[in-house]
Length: 284
Image 1 (cartoon, one colour):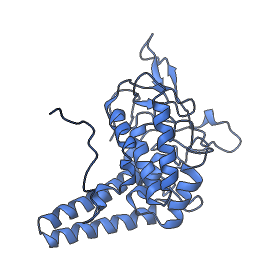
Image 2: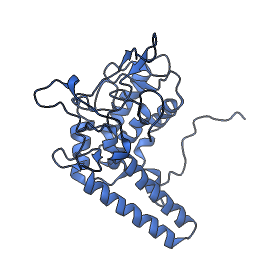
Image 3: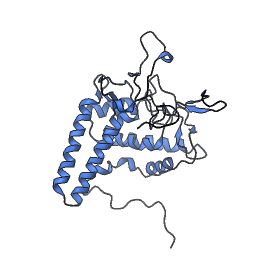
Image 4: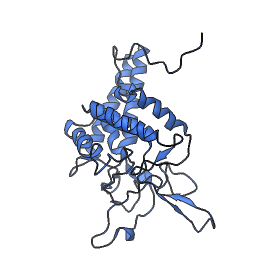
């Protein structure tokens, strides 16, 4: 999971602070935030709600594939593993005070205290208890104090001290004269991830709210000259790389309300649309 280069010890989410050994990610009593010792990035020391929820969906996908091949025994085995994983996610990764999914240290059992976009993937996967799903959607995703920013939804809860809506440029000593974008994954918005979070809203009965937020996202994206990799979540200004492919794909997915469909792995017979909207009409 750890990537070479900048920042040292970084993860697939660049400079996100989700897996730092200095967790929980809160200031020490009586000390300012900037004096916090974050420690080293060690993703291997944390159980995370997003990767486990995605693995749950992949197990269901394998079960569906086995069903299609009439391998019923294998399908039952994959499905049983999925159910076991879902139970473990809910037993280990729901922080009891906030009732939100959080990363948890595998050795100490301490939660990081950071609600982020990964916290809603179990809701998207359909495994969250009803009260947890309701709290996650109503009190966090749909709250302007947390994730309902100008360009929803930021990677990090805006109420958390680590939140930086657009980052800043940093001059690292190792690269004289160079500027590096800092706080890349500490508060910007990635609209392809928004598709999952809108799906979490739909899974929890907030369909109308999901449609309204999707319209706001599309309107916000349309204010920039191109479609960017990510966006400043408070200003809506496009940053990161312009003309970005997965963001462009996300625009199409949002425009066609693909987020309203259940995760592909959970589709059952009779729920597949008879006709998928055609984006391009071939010339005769």
